[in-house]
Amino acid sequence: MELTKNSQLYTETTYAYPTLFVLGNETLGVSSEALDMVNFSVHLPVYGMVNSLNVATAASVILYDTARKYLDTLETAC
Image (cartoon, rainbow, N blue to C red; front, side, top):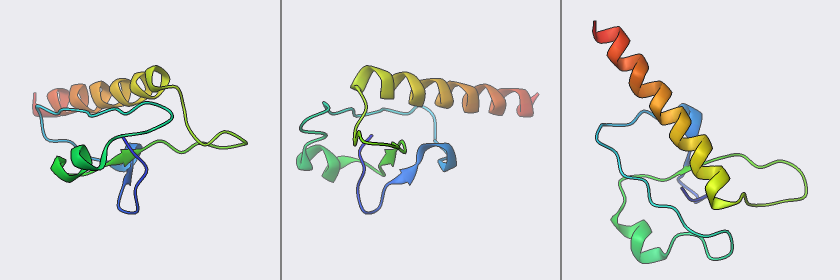
């Protein structure tokens, strides 16, 4: 997860499974070398005075949303 000029809002993203997430720390983010290797980047909107979330908090949000979407695909397939 990284805010880039081409990143997608996490709620509007469709994933192919299996999926791997690359998470950077709050200060430095994801390295440019890692970003060069990913298929796409997603971000979480942050409102107010803060411009980033704790990586554990961000991971919790994105992993929950991804699990929900995955379970929805299983239910639809049945």
